[in-house]
Amino acid sequence: MITEIDKDTIYFSSLFARHYPELYGEIKDILTKNGVPNGTITNTADYFCRDYMPVQIDMQHYLLYIYDPDYLKEEPKYTTDIELVLSTLKKIKVEVVKIPLKLDGGNMIFCQAKNPLDETSYIVMTDKVMIENESYSKSEIETIIKEPLLKTCKDVDILWLPWDESEKCGHTDSIVRYVGIGETGKPKVFVNLEVYEEKDANDMYDILSDKMEVVEIQLPEYDELSWAYINSVQTDDIIIVPGLGNQKNDATVMEQYETLFPYYKGKIYLVQMGEYVKEWGAALNCSTWTIKQK
Image 1 (spheres, rainbow, N blue to C red):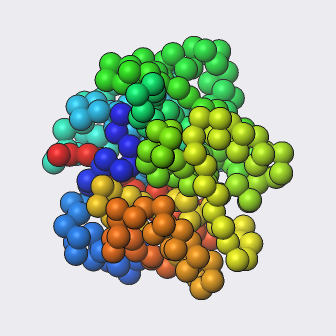
Image 2 (cartoon, one colour; image 1 turned 90 degrees about the horizontal axis):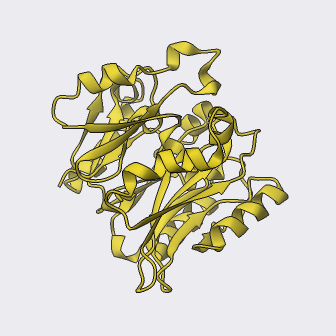
């Protein structure tokens, strides 16, 4: 299983680079400074390539699902034709494994356990997938998702978080960030649950903490957009965190990232993008496609 910690290359939609040149330029400068390979993807209909680009599952294969999000039904012009995008990729060899499920890449967080008794690979998703694929049972959905991964993973478990229907996308990449292997050998995750109703937040915590070490975000001041702090972009060498313009919160979050990711010392950056987050309801993980090429 390829987690965000394993990846080494970042791609943005060419639309993002064109429409937000200053923000894109600042990010690109960070990537160039640190020698992180990066580029843009053409023929996209919006900025959020995390959701429609195939999810890398090993060095050769990418999981290609049906990208037909219900939240774009009234604005079909924003629905990317992924086959068109893939046909124009020139520098990347993408061998896809197609599955007959409606999914978004932002709703698949890969985590890994590693201890003498457990090397389970985990996928954290919201149960919105059940609604989007109502012709399949839960067990059928799990089998379809797990089968391609079991060719290279010893065991795969899907953790289903409750979907807060007020958050129309139902993604987990603004709820959970994989930190790495914890001291117990369980996956460690960084989460922001305070923006959810108490019952959903408690349910999410219970589901995650049953299998993982959970570290909750700590902020001096409440911010309904604070989910964006979890929606950072990461490779094996750097992390770029979305800043929201609240100096106290931004500084505290950076301290938490530096504590949680000590092996990224000097390679964790903050990029101010509060207006982008507010306008689009998305941040950096949403706006990138990250892969492992070497």
